[in-house]
Image: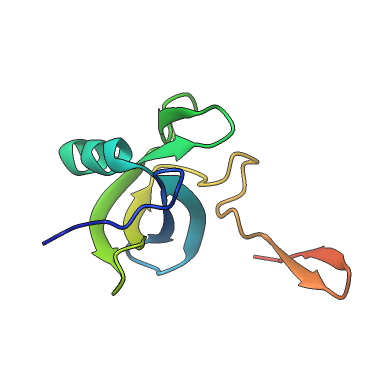
Length: 112
């Protein structure tokens, strides 16, 4: 049975990768409603900790994440969402939220 173990804020971490290439796209948080809406619609929904509200990824940008699979870790406190992005996954316009690496104390852009 799927019995997600949510943290004290009612959230769990969701790691999103490209369903075909495996590229790491983003990390976000889901609550029970976000999980349910994602399963119902096939599009990734998350809980915005800053806005304290449910959000459909791509609702304003059109850059939806069409979910192909959701994997659950052994402790059921983290989800791996495999999705096809309809545009950049990052709000900055980068294809992935992970477009920089830490080099000593500086952030270095990753050349794609």
